[in-house]
Image (tube, rainbow, N blue to C red; front, side, top):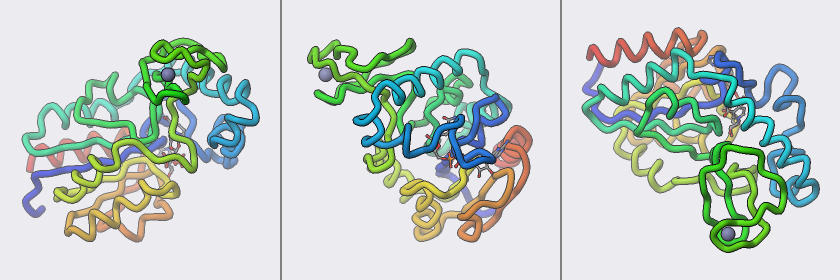
Length: 233
Ligand code: NAD
Ligand code: ZN
């Protein structure tokens, strides 16, 4: 393997599937029985706040019943041990990476365990149910909403992600369908700057053609194997 110092890892719902969290599209194209348009857009939130808040309340409550799996643990180990730059960019809104112990990470699509004020833009940790019109502790507007980046909204920390991608020697995509932009385009940015690109997924994805290498199988097996490999470089 060529000299690798800086690593960017993109994770998606597939890395949390073996912890018991349903993936986005699932076998039936739904997220926990709901159409994406009904729970994952600003229009849905405006039209039916009760439904959207309840949906994320259920997802947040479910997090207390699940634990990180071997894939999250392996990435946390890599984060601890890797001497070069490392950034884990997750599209997931669960908190399994941080509960496994990862530090060099960010949530580009928001977090279930956070509430965002639609009036003043402040966010704060939130662990309980979040009824519509909950007042913001900072500005008092009855405007707290789930801190989730909906379709049509700007993902978080794109500048930091771009900077990490520009310096990357290796880009690894784990358990993501490669269907949601801008994350789906990271592999092309990484290739463009000359990084090696590796996909770890249960099956090959829409984006597989862009990767130097695709390994197929469950994340709980592929990720620990790959981390062992990379730490023995
Ligand atoms: P996706 O559901 O579109 O795709 C999941 C991918 O994971 C598929 O390519 C599938 O082949 C793969 N996969 C399934 N089981 C796997 C396993 N055991 N090991 C390895 N790969 C496996 O997920 P996505 O691309 O992350 O979709 C994006 C959106 O879904 C994100 O915006 C995210 O916020 C949202 N989402 C998050 C969660 C979560 O936080 N856990 C759950 C569902 C959806
Ligand atoms: Zn506010």
